[in-house]
Amino acid sequence: MKILVIGSGGREHALAWRLAQSEKVQKVWVAPGNAGTAREPGVENFPASAPATLAEFARREKIGLTVVGPEAPLAEGVVDLFRSRGLRIFGPTRACARLESSKEFSKDFMQRHGIPTAAYRAFSVAAPAHEYLRTRSAPVVVKADGLAAGKGVVVAGSLEEAHRAVDRMLVQASLGAAGSRVVIEDFLEGEEASFIVMCDGREVLPLATSQDHKRLLDGDAGPNTGGMGAYSPAPVVTPEVHARVMREVILPAVNGMAEAGTPYTGFLYAGLMIHEGAPRVLEFNCRLGDPETQPILMRLKSDLYELLDCAVEGRLAGAQAQWDRRVALAVVLAARGYPDAPRGGDEITGLPEPGEDLHVFHAGSARRDGRLVTSGGRVLSVTALGDSVRLAQRRAYEAIEAIGFQGMQFRRDIGHQAVNARSR
Ligand code: AMP
Ligand code: GLY
Image (cartoon, rainbow, N blue to C red; front, side, top):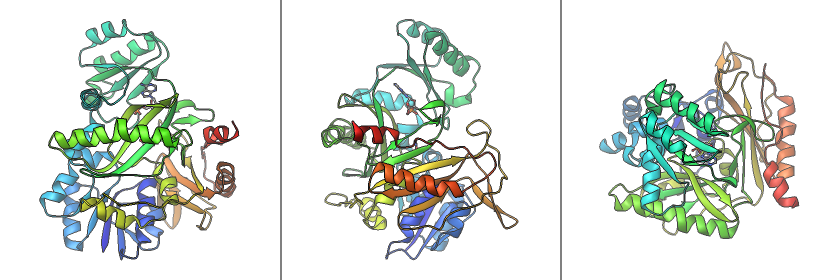
């Protein structure tokens, strides 16, 4: 079986690496991929991103299954296109991807199905948005309705800041069409966790839990990013919380999409805020998380291809995934200037050999004139397994000591919540 993975980040590198280990998989193509996927055994890059080009490639190469990493091609309808040509693909259709591509759709859907989330209203005109804000208290959250590559959410510490965010999005159109409609929602307190499931339209298979670190700097300070590190499992998701998330969030979402005539297939990611054991949804994503995927797949012991095959064939009922009991932890190494204006072209040195408990997944890396150089914001995710959070941290940070490129930025406290949870 030949597989195609669409995307070019650390998430897609991890997917390709795991899939290449399956006995049923002959070869994994990644489109467009990066310098890490180019060198991964059993993996090769195909330099294209346009859905129509990829569908043509899948037909010509006799690709047996395509897996989609990022949200943009899903929102463009890559799954609908592949299916219309009789090509097997795992991911949500364009209609299902609206759970991520429109915050308003997602919030209305949650409200209709009684899925716990923050109170909200949506606006496309500034005056009523300002009026609504006067009925709220700070902190309050202003979100662009559309996909804004992680820049669309303002957690405003004061009402003045929230008013300014509304004007930036609705009046100055700073985010273009993505911000031409905004959702204003109440601030939720608690601890965040990522809860990701595989879904075949009716049945779900929960993946191991994880937690992401969205802020750039240690101690959860600085600007929001795509994610500076992650680890799995997330201790905040106790067995009780897990059961509540399945009952109150995941099953109503999957049943709701099926009832609407748009059964959800693909990975479904609920970004949760957990407060005193009660989960509430911050957002749905219609894909795996990045960097959460790296630690999750480091811990997956089952054959990933077999699980995906069950999901695509509607046979997830009864499927089970086995997980390594160890903790996996990924630290993102980002380029100088990330997240605003990452600089490319800096030479990367000192990459360690992969081992049973260590793998460096690439994202913004490229090979130029025989040199490995940075070519994006998040460059590498150094992912390690350990018998405890501290040991996984130690293994990852030891490997990082040898790695270097000009202006390399990373957090030194990935996993701090879990360390504290365990010593509490
Ligand atoms: P989102 O893309 O909607 O997940 O938002 C990005 C980040 O903003 C989240 O990971 C949270 O840290 C924060 N955030 C979003 N919505 C809220 C909320 N209602 N209350 C508190 N924090 C939030
Ligand atoms: N790491 C957060 C995300 O993938 O959306």
